[in-house]
Amino acid sequence: MMKKRILMVVMDGLGDRGCRSLGGLTPLQVAETPNLDWFAQNGSSGIMDLISPGVRPGSDTSHLSLLGYEPYSVYKGRGPFEAAGIGLVGRKGDVAFRCNFSTVDEAMNVVDRRAGRVKEPDTVELVNALQGMTIQGIEVHVRQGTEHRAALLLRGPGLSADVSDADPHEMGPVLESRPLSPGADLTARVVNEFVRRSYEIWKDHPVNQRRRQEGLPEANILLPRGAGSFPDIDPFPQKHGMKAACVAGVGMIKGICGICGLDVLDVPEACTGGLDTDMIAKAEAALSALKEYDFVLMNIKAPDLTGHDGHAEEKLKVVRRLDTMAAYIRERLEDDMVVAFTADHCTPVDAGDHTGDPVPLTIYTQGLVQDRCQSFNEADCAYGRLGRLRGCDLLPVLMDMANRSTKFGA
Ligand code: ZN
Ligand code: ZN
Image (cartoon, rainbow, N blue to C red; front, side):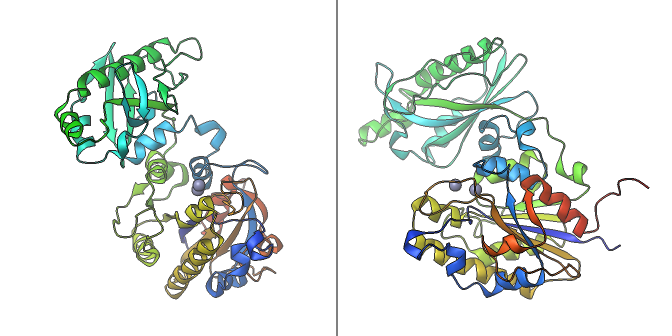
């Protein structure tokens, strides 16, 4: 059997519900999508619950599922994926947090949670002033993200992710991190000491002296939240026997792929993670990666953004652009390619957030059984022969279609 290469196209938050402004139809049902429909007509389709029916997935847990991992056993909090997404990749036992550069007054009350959306180069300079710190025998690593975001990674014996946030999530006093289970005392103490030191080191830092003069909010404290421990994950290439890469714009998706052992490819013009992303450039990057890799995951964030914004018209525009991207892929299909089009969850425009509805799925490769699904959308894919899958079943199904699965029995 010829081993094929797999391209997984994840259109983030693409699935929807019946929209009021679209006469009760979904954007996928309303938009003309001749190319996505071509894949549905010539491939096998189904609908998919990323985690399980009715569970509202985050993009992190859903991508773990898409990569063939059981999210409930692997997912230990958001911190590690955010940290890995900005290049702070830890190992088993490390504990990571998402952080905000914030502004506090002298009484340690948060007066601006984003420090006036402080950004580089100020954040880089401030973070540099914190490097090389050890607290109670625990190594402390900090990295700035985009704008006011950062990540904190703790490394050493006896750490636990079971601690509360120092970030109050609103204006008001900075919180003491508390242990939420026995054995988390050390971690809570380290977090509190770290927060205190960030204030001590930053309150009169030259960056903040300058910001004060310019009338900008000072970035004088770093507030951690969302503690998570780095999971003990079987790297994807070993687990599935495939050399794998991802093309994505969003830090968290890159982080998940990085933690799972995929090569995270840098395609700056294609990977903005915003509505301005160049989808054709992204498809081009994914297809050229497929010359070298057995498996490529490509994430396009744009549909999710329009869903959160609640803009049906904008989501329709994004769907049309996705179809143009599908045309680009269709024109470049090769016999040894398996292509899957799907989403990591629904972000219905009328809901403005992720829902637990199943997402549409279409898989194309030469020689597949064609089924009754004629168009790629939430309703018609349910007529396909793949039926209703769980997210973590998709990878085994794709591997089988790619003639890469191992035989069970004689
Ligand atoms: Zn998502
Ligand atoms: Zn979302």
